[in-house]
Length: 278
Length: 255
Ligand SMILES: Nc1ncnc2c1ncn2[C@@H]1O[C@H](COP(=O)(O)OP(=O)(O)OP(=O)(O)O)[C@@H](O)[C@H]1O
Ligand SMILES: [Mg+2]
Image (cartoon, rainbow over the protein chains, first blue to last red):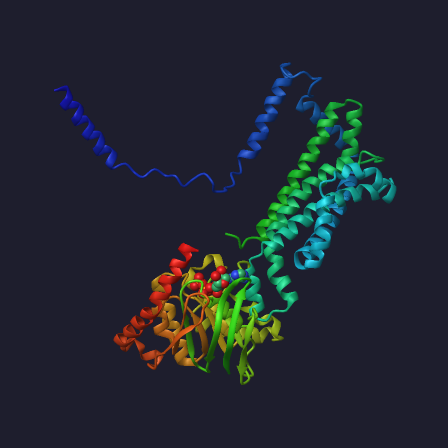
């Protein structure tokens, strides 16, 4: 009797199993933008940190409370020094990064297009790329002077090499079929480069810009270590040497914000220039 | 303008790809090239259009291309080769931009080919928004825009589903009946070959040489009425190719 019941139950289970919907397995790897999450994460972390500082869970010696850092930031704004520091830093960043990127794109294209340039320059690039540019800073000071020259040069060199490498990688990856198509329609060499190779390499070039922008901000602080009166990096280093940790955190927050803004701008550029991508 | 392939042979390193190919492509004639996979059909087509040079032999052009032909030898590629960042109009315009035409002239040519390929409604679409058949129509429009003397087509329909293929075949037959273009059409589809070809060249397996040239005299636009004759031709072609295809297959397994 019990056996029969079990069997009947089994059959019912089997029947139920037969009509279940096919499980969905296709999700997970699609890139979607969820806009509200990022600010939420930031707010939660900062709130937790503030809470920890207020209750004494995080000692003030270890890490200043966000409110203190915010106070330092307000002081900076009110004294008018923020504009001074920020403009000094932005000037170095923008000149260094844009010159480094433009030169890097040019050299990357040369390496991508001409076998002779590739043979001559790509080993050189590989040899110099891994050298930390910070190590060369004293040399830059000798070569370009203690003023703006050495700082811009550090950022320029730091962004130049990764841009070269991503650019010629991008040129190498342009669909050969499209180039062949251009040749088959009798396009000039220059047309093929401008209308097929450059747009084809643009995705790689833009993601190279993303990387080099971060590198530029990292190097900014390093470059402002020597002989800089103004600049976010100089401000952070001064705060650090005085153990004014609230100012230090405020400065770091400014750097992060700069990074976020750069990333956003490049994201916009990608949306605009690469709207043809699937 | 006629083309004459004179005794073409080619090797890639150790591998002989083509051997003693001698072939004429006459004005207003569609020459279909069929053969087993890897026998050098695409390579041959690259030689005809001057994208690559054969190791021995040469391709000669007999008679001048028509005055108004902007690009006498024009390809239609299997994978369409459209620039993904340009719209339909932009892709067609690409082929015209290096020929010193005024913007107005370019525009009128583009409008004309769009109408002929029934693409006028899609002029501003990007390739990613188009279906496969539509993309190939854009590629055909681009080829027509430069007024080719000879069209070189490398399996132009093989990336498409069979219904779309039929539709595009009809388009090509229409086009030929109206304008009578010259073409070299590479395919592995014997049915396409008998529907389009005036002359069907059967290549042997690698190294590819000409096994036979089959002529079909029925006018293109009447072929739909001669299904039996075409079937027979197709059977004849298949009989020729069967052993070659089989041998080519074995070769891959053994080698
Ligand atoms: N650039 C190249 N370098 C070396 N070998 C090549 C090159 N191009 C083609 N081959 C070889 O030449 C042979 C013929 O190639 P081809 O593409 O012309 O064949 P096919 O007849 O078009 O084949 P399919 O029907 O598969 O398109 C193949 O074995 C291929 O591997
Ligand atoms: Mg091929």
